[in-house]
Image 1: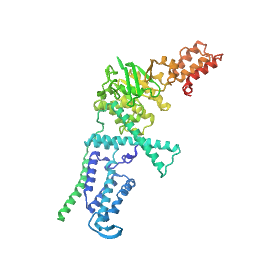
Image 2: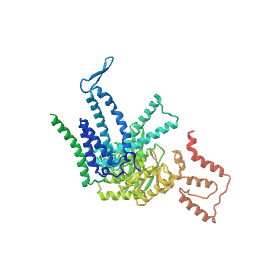
Image 3: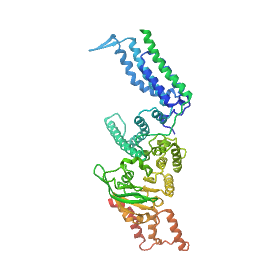
Image 4: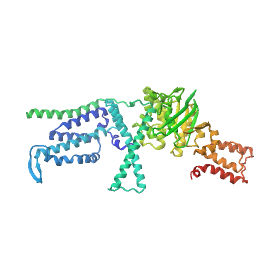
Length: 262
Length: 308
């Protein structure tokens, strides 16, 4: 049985076979590089590159789109607000009381579109980055990359106990329902659920203490070590060169463009 | 050599409630002991003192494991000596994969890779979970989780194994499997300390019982403790069902001096009685039968009536 978070980790694709350490570093570098871009054309090219990566990884687009939907809702205000703010003076198109609405030209629309595409592309890249290896292997990769041990442990424990907590909350909700509680859009629902969640936090605190006791009982002295070992093969480096190469390419293109512009 | 020595141990929770008061007992190496007591008697608190996780200024000198006092600063060295299996398996399985969870303890003991792998394999084999290394702990069933939690402790090959309610909330098959695992461990000559409310499992697992209710109320061979039914009922505990049945049979004139504690004991007892009675067991109703039965039954139903 696999957990939902690892649902596509068992597929077979070049991205799945890529060493998780190099994969995390390369794609993270690519995301970083895309975040630094302020050129719509290059951002669109990057998005196409990301789509190709997702296609190679065989993670269904429907799955990714379902999750990008929420990101889109989050960045949607940029599309609405940015064209009327930020760049230049703009031309007045409406006046409501003391508030004037200035349209700042096609550049500002481009700017807004670019921000939205950058956000969507970055989030899209997360899927081939962590969705193509089992979560525990990714954690081991992070540890191998010398990420602070405490940070990796925090991630690993969050991952492990999110299921326990969601299960506890489900049990709690069932117990509420079986005693006649009905969810609605009223204050009673909010206070009841708030209380339930507060109790869940207290319970999780107590469980954290018990887990800590169990770890101490098993000789834990501050560091988690595991037995997994990674091996690097030529194709790992090839994929790294391609992805990192693209990340560098777009930056060079920006730099070149700036040179030409001057 | 004593495996566990507890001398005048006391512990008070931060809210001022006394959890343990003047607890003293000694368990020899190779002994298997059941620790029983009502809810809130301090059993789990006592368990956490055995490897130094809970400690207080007064408790430090009170607990000795394998003839060495428990130093709270050296808790990480304790797993070699005493392994503790917690009541809730979810507290014990915290790694992404079961294999990692079982390897966690041995790695912390500083063993080399081959040895860790051997321990993981052996421990999973002992609990009947061979091939579960790559399973995700939170997707195991309740019984599997309990056995997995046991494996994580067995992998450290501790001299003493202490368990908190190993058979609670298990289906009959899982319960039986767990009892068998513990019996095998016991046969290896290891020291066992089992906290349990499962009185029917005690005769199979422990030859000695310690009754705790903040302090040690009784301590002796399993048979002696279970023959003191008044004391057990008084603090809210029970005796095995088989024992209760034979007590009723006595009222029907069944000749039985020593009440059996388990099915095995009952079979032996019945066989011996029949062999002495020309292949028959004679039961009859006499003038004291009904009053005897009602007094025997009342004794065990007292739990409820007393509080009414």
